Image (tube, helix red, strand yellow):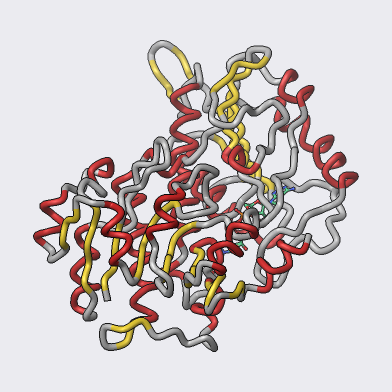
Length: 383
Ligand code: NAD
């Protein structure tokens, strides 16, 4: 079976779905691998390195996609509005696509893929279980985003992060507040701590308190009645407008006195809750920085402009999009590991064999046999 890796075409996308080091494992499993010429270039993986590991390099994208039995991408259909129609038309009936696809936000596109008789796996739907950990691309990318967000904040801040005791006096450390302590938030905490900042964090899931503290940050307790904060999968549940208003009020003082705020709060399949209203931004000292990683899903801060760095009443507000693509070497390395482990999980003797009873295979499967097969995506379509 031929596994194809086209070059990513989304503007600014520098990642690639496979790197040379992952090719040999696929070949050993009895698969053939072909990449589009230049697929890894923007992530610093030249064609010749793929070839050295046994991959073929194809010049013609259409022909590559048309031959493929399995297509691996970072940003597949659904993950951005202008996904090339020519790519979709090129994919052959019965072939399998594995990529990010935003299935809950774009259920109509998932239905179209099903109607085209494609088998589609969404990397976003990978179960967050111990067994699937090595295939969990959301966690990989969130780790990078949390790290990079702190570097962006440190770079934009007019202050130093660490404490310095110098002959020219003592510099007090920056105060960093991390909102949302999931994978990205925890990495943001760790990175800010490594840079020497004093870090506080809040999450509506009280379960993360220990993790926050183990990284040397203070877990902020807010008097909030969240009822059930998380679902059975460990994800945060959406809360009422009243709840978010109360949360905004309780956090206002804390944010006002922070030099840097990193926001990562997300609820799967929903727009991110607005947790920092305009007046709270305006209350911060000039030169304070907010990096809103939730910008891709609307943002946690009311003044965030997704994809932009703005100055609002003296406060620098950064709304990064596709932040993990800014670290393409390691983002691709991690993604390639995740996607190839997942693929190999389903390959037996050089053939793709779907065990629809397997929780990992079933969990990530969106479309198969001409139908939408993932209940959450079917439900999203009905909404
Ligand atoms: P996410 O990106 O969906 O959300 C980021 C964080 O925002 C979460 O911690 C969430 O609780 C928090 N949040 C939501 N609303 C908030 C609010 N109003 N105020 C403050 N914080 C708010 O989360 P994620 O990083 O993808 O992690 C989700 C869950 O998955 C966690 O329980 C995590 O431990 C779990 N997980 C498990 C595995 C595994 O076992 N393999 C891997 C990764 C993540």
